[in-house]
Length: 249
Image (cartoon, rainbow, N blue to C red; front, side, top):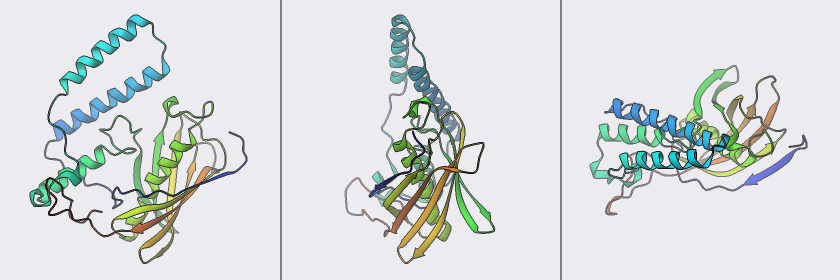
């Protein structure tokens, strides 16, 4: 895209909990590792389907094998954390549900083949703590020729920025506003780095800013500003078949 600045403002009510990194405990590490390996293979399959141009025989055989693989996955439906009744949740189950929620998240989830996956952590410098994100994206997320789709970049910003409230122990939050400023085209097939920091925090409202940087320079390809609003922990007690993790929103 041209170097001219484009500003996009989005109002997003995102009701997934933004409450810091997920816990990493898991009662069945072998199953989790197998799920991660499977997601990696599916991710690679999606990339090949997008990148390669096989003949009809190869496509038909691949379809048959994928259909067989899907039959191997038959089993009970995995309950998401908010679908589990509160009275069923103990400390061990809460840890497992948090881990599963992180593993299947849209951008970071290692067991979600649709996730790149994005790796998010926190660092600190003379200006204080900040959130970092790193990711490498291929042509499956292409917008302009050899460049990342701007809408996908906005989603990555939202995910990285959602870690900022945890820097000030703000608790569960939702994204109330997200504004993106596209400075220049963001390339594919390179290691992108995101940095996000607190700008203002007052009561239930927090403003954070972030930037995306590609290798070979310190200039941002895009910048973002988000407004987060704290929400009370949801309680779904009394609703049959539904529930909430303690302390999540």
